[in-house]
Length: 120
Image 1 (spheres, one colour):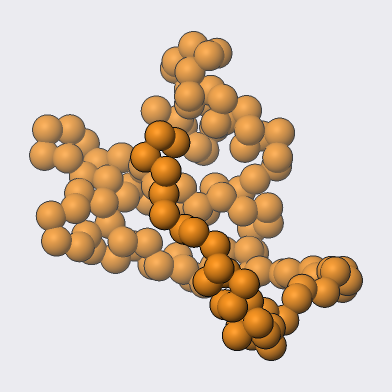
Image 2 (cartoon, helix red, strand yellow):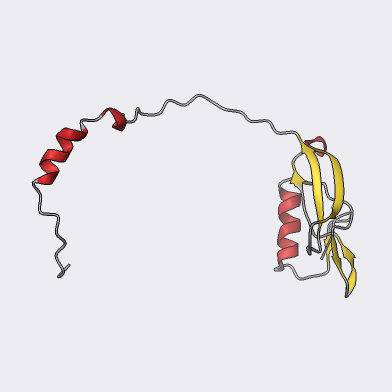
């Protein structure tokens, strides 16, 4: 289990938790979930769900709602700020198949013996 406040884990360097922690640090991500979201009758509640983003203000107004149905996880609701940069890239034109000569294609195709060879 990762301690998100201190970015510490008790497991070995090859563990998933350690690799996740290293990736979060390397990519300078912010973990936005800071309350327990998982509940198990046999153990204490835990912070299991993640919302990772680059900036603190990318995710706002977190709302920790009750679980749905038999799930042992709370529903997370939040606002997110997303910037999409779109550069115009010209792509090669695609043929307009809906303007093709269907009848002209059907006639030569009807001359072919389309019976499948059982040896193939």
